[in-house]
Length: 181
Image 1 (spheres, helix red, strand yellow):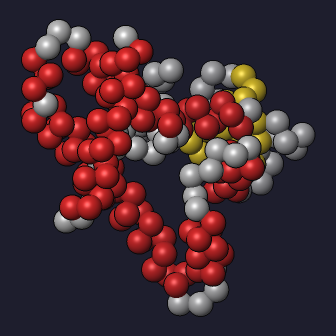
Image 2 (tube, one colour):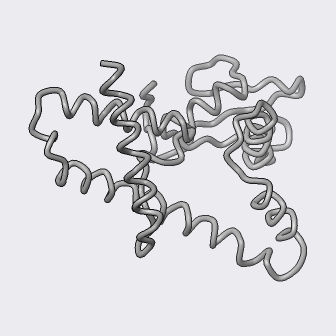
């Protein structure tokens, strides 16, 4: 689902009509929330605006997408995190939480890239025919399972226990993939 300007440049503009229908200005057709989620998973930046007022509705629709996935049992956010987020809307935490969450996700994404590189360098299977295809399948699987938030399992720097857990999970996934082949 590669699209023009993927991940860079101007965000994909979606206009919301008075009827609440969402219109993709790039392809000139109507889209659903699931379509918007798919654009985001594919790496697109999306901007949703009200046609009449010009108000930016992006945050509202992103939260709605998250709420729908969570209500369908596709839970990513633990109850404790959701509770803490609710608490952060009152008090001094409101100014710190957005920056903290952004930095945490950036660190997580950077850690996964490094882990994937290390896995390839340390793995004796790396020279075997078909290894790259298997690695690409694993990366695609992890991206799908995490909704595009991360590219592959990886640690935060300095957390040995978590690194061991992730290595174990990765080995289990590799074993399952090899049994499927």
